Image (cartoon, rainbow, N blue to C red; front, side, top):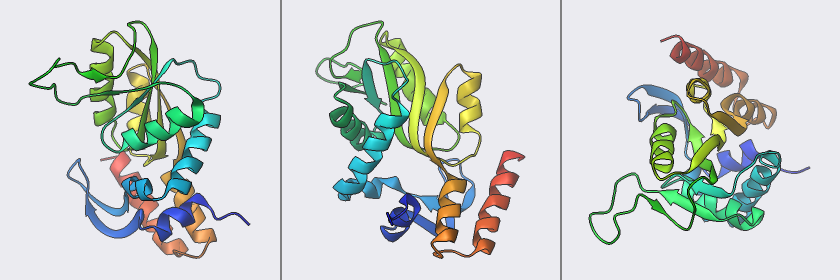
Length: 199
């Protein structure tokens, strides 16, 4: 039987339990660190294959990986899907051309934004603003894991659609089935998520 994605992430230390400070400042009982996937080419390509399937019905001419975690994913997807990669600079260069979007593109082309995880969508909206200011069109955002903290809803309010391969609940369920965590741990995290959504 194929090892579940949740098991793979757990074994490589990409899902950890404890107390972790998030970018938003809140403390989380779980941390999802997909940057570790860059050291596992097989898993990276497995994710790229799943992204190709998930994006099959989307219309886009460019893949825009968000630095830094979204760049390896965007590169893997670009190679697998045979679509050109570009990426937004979160800070403009003070030298050279000073451009905010790296790579070759034309104004009016549609970019599929790619990143590893979504929590509150702040970094996604920041990247989208850079892409749109360069004349690109953004309709869809694809991530590997949706932490289910409201990011999808915020993107939707702004007119963008989120496509996530997995939710945090999916991963927790997979870990319980694999007996890597107990149901009580799963409930602890889900209760925390519920509190965050109503905070």
